[in-house]
Length: 307
Image 1 (cartoon, rainbow, N blue to C red):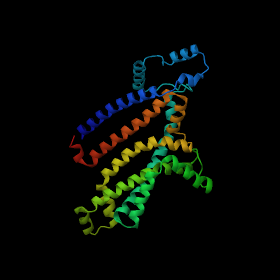
Image 2 (tube, helix red, strand yellow):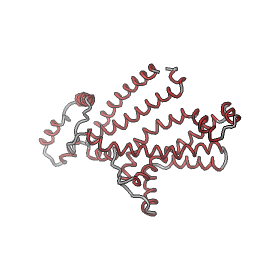
Image 3 (cartoon, helix red, strand yellow):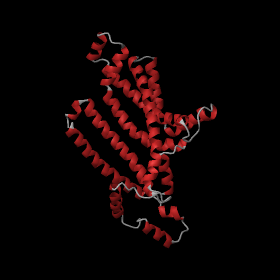
Image 4 (cartoon, rainbow, N blue to C red):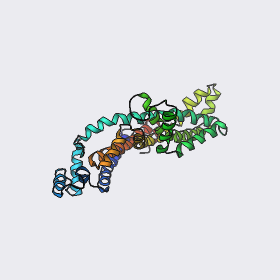
């Protein structure tokens, strides 16, 4: 296990270095000048050049990258070009809202997908199976930017049950979480169904039933446990997708998280904040996948012996 863990951590560090560099380069080739966004197009050339020099944007790209990496290793993400606020402070203010939304979306997905996929597998080729797969197809096909407004129209404008936007109370979390978790629930339900169908025909399942165990105990403690690896794979991959997809969902519902901060910073050409937000989402994706790999090795010893 230590060798397996060290190999995964080393590969993660290499990926993180590549992600940091790629994010830096992509942000700097995006069209638009942050100096013009800050001073306006009518500002004097001398004022623009003075501000550019003060912010270090007149240096070659490789020099800016070196400065960025040095500051990053110190934990310094720089200052906002727009508000002059420390980027670390802005990220810490918005991060709890994004984590709350991502965890709520994940909880919604799991609570829908596990029973739905299990029923579809246990009632194969019946109405329940067809209904579950129809829901999965619908959930995958409907994008967040369409699902969100539909939920707002139905539950907020027509029924008046839930707030339209903002983060005022627990009820304001319901619609964003449903929007974010619906697509994941659809994907996860199909995965639960397919893995359970493979496991339910194994000899140890027949043995468990022959011992007189209830169907609930057979499915919960034997079938689902042995079908966990593919399900964990989807959860690990989709948790990163939830953080990325939160950008659209937070914009629709005016949720004050990292996603909304990213959109606002892109509009202002605020390089340090955009870099920090994109980097945070990318690193979250990498770290979640690394955690998934380590969890594999803990659940199934055959995985770590292949390293």
